[in-house]
Length: 111
Image (cartoon, rainbow, N blue to C red):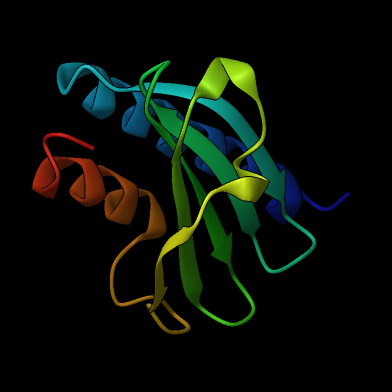
């Protein structure tokens, strides 16, 4: 593992922590996160409330953010939920993907 990989890992976790802290102010929780550093930094994140959560999938190769939901976080998978958004942010992204998640909840107070 190169130092760059280690640095990117720390940076990613720091950004994730910053997102979780920002969402907490909106009364939103982060329930699940998977990061695929070797797949162009792609990741999956489940956030929301226990009764109304969304799955965010960042495709770092294609530069696309997909959002599925809402679904009940404690009762299953988002796979049966409809896709709410497929938005191309580009490579490099026009908006940092974690900021996209924060903006999603800021602009949808009942999400």
